[in-house]
Image (cartoon, rainbow, N blue to C red):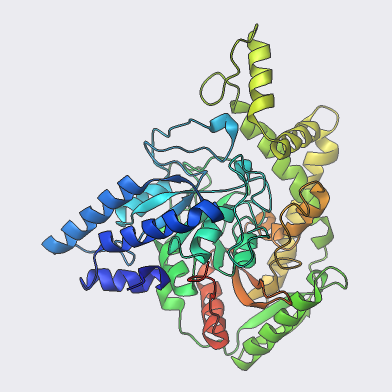
Length: 489
């Protein structure tokens, strides 16, 4: 039996019913990784020994019985390479952290382990989550399983490839400006950025602390909801974590959309800003939603035009501050044979960081510098407030906002790597949700003219991930998306 073709909840059911063992499932995915990862480069650190031990422990617990099990008990998962897991490498796909071994577990990793989910390893990413294509990784790019000449999206490209190619039934990524949703769209899987504060960031290596959020990748909406329920919740170790009850997200599935109101912002559908085949897929999706009972209306989010500039001021400023800790002194890469402390720190950072990370550190340092702080960083924070108010006004009348996830389907490897502005524009439709702190989900809604996945984005009210699952699940059932690469890669 090909376990790698089944969804996570299907696997969990078979494991609980003892039709298969967690070890059999885990070994099946390990074999799949051994066969396919050499080409796809989704995993950068394989943790098979630990995964097998966890799976064996799951099988022993099942044999004894009498213990309440999580909905995903025994099902393997993959982590993005910026999440701390005790005793394993956490490199952020950067030379400066090439040999860093984490001494502790991130909160999400603690929850994954408590849920009895074997961790297969760490997935490839743009260095320190800075990028939209996974081409900024010191480990080289991951390849899109739909077309190996194309990018899988970023920065969580490895996680999306792992799920799309059947190397793991589930994965975790982090999203600072679209780094879960954009690769999910490129690879034809489901990716959710939860509300800021819904999932603990403790143990997530920081890029931009006011924007970063951990979220799930999955093959379908039901699996995504089940995984979010496991990782969400208050954590006193994260000062930005919100003490709000986590609902049973599965109860939001299989509901009617009758009377639900969806807003379509005109700023996201401007002529020339969207590939024709993406627009066609979105228009078809709107018709499906209408048949399901949803109501649509065009709205305006007037400060949308300032999102990109605002994001790249705030994100780079916070990156400059967060990455100051990598100095070659405490841990990570250190330049040897330096003649002074200053020379050692300078050369360690110059050799340890890649070009994109250096670019963002310099931009961030500049906007925070004396004489420029008020003109750039302070002004960006004020505009961020206006962007959030735009969403607040729309959510007074509507249940969610529907937009494209990306302007076009996955582009060719190398196509934009030398043009930072064009690369940054890949996230033009996703960054607003991070600036506003609201939840957003990307799900497949069709194929482009060149037979690549197209993503649909739903943006919701704060802490209303359940309503997003209601809308997304109804659409998914009506559309009937099939991941045709899962067994063909």
